[in-house]
Length: 506
Image (cartoon, rainbow, N blue to C red; front, side, top):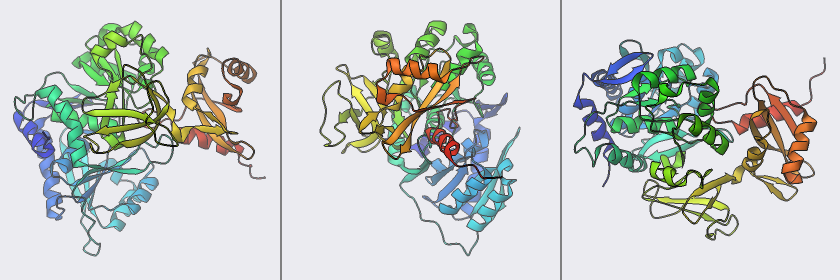
């Protein structure tokens, strides 16, 4: 069975046009208002003769109009080209110069940037300005240029997706409609039964707390619409906005990255205000077992970790509530088990030979949402136990080879987080002329604390093998993070590299 995404979106919009669909800054938009904006966007795309498969760039801020634009491009089976609004206008302009676009949809705020508008004009694409005021709107700013060659149609591609850029510069990954629809099918079955049979609007809202421009946020938002569930949109995660929304709308399930969970704990959000939550799904970054214990003991809300990647258009493994009840204490640190329809194994890094239980190797996935006929190799190192629980041991492409010895940053970080004043830490590798690479550590301290480097070294040497001990330490006010609150290893590495550059003479 397959999910026809276009038909599903149209069916949901027609269920109850007057009912609330999107909440943003304390204002609700109806399903009918969403459809009105989507129709306006479709009219402009059609007038520009942008057919099925035409690449349409969307600067994806977490705002209602941008979500409507995303849904319309998907419902018309054009190709979404994601553009990151968290970059500077100049960086976005450079991105525009190297991608094929038939149209660019951006917020009125973004169109005010000279660099962005100039890049779109040079591209010769249709330009649509959207706004999320009390009434959503879509206005044509730039007409297509007849002198510009038509972009290549991407008839099978739903999304040309930017990766999060955690370990290096972001890259684009093509997600076919078949993969996205297969990934969303499980969510549709869970929420509303098979296909559109019995489809009805839900009363408990979903909450979008992660960026639409990343696969986690995009998948979550589209899955909510497919399930006919209203959405409370946070433009950017803050504890105060999240607390307000949960207390007001009493959702039962939502997703948060581990960094946001730590922020909620630190803010001491009252337990009763979030008691509606049956569980919180988490992922996108390692969930520290100590953080999980502290949160669950304080709030009594299970944290259900998950594993996925942009290439899979969603999660392929995770915890269920039943598994949490049975194994929460004995399998802590796992990202769960393979989801139905997914197979996961680990293989030897060098030979590709399939490894047995409790052996560390490269993680491979075989699933219908990718290609059920072959195994897809990831860059993650993992271990699978005899109950099928998956433990991520780090990234192969993040492994630091120090004089022939392999250092896995995640293992080192887990040990060093036990130091009393360390709030968070990031280990990266730097080039070394003698050893090839050496580990260095950027440290974020708990409020009101200090740290002595000699004491840190002593702590590390007591608990780590000598080659795992960082050769340099850097205390930062806050670790650099991606918009989805993952620590950016790429930016941490740049901090160290910048600190080693010779300073200009004066």
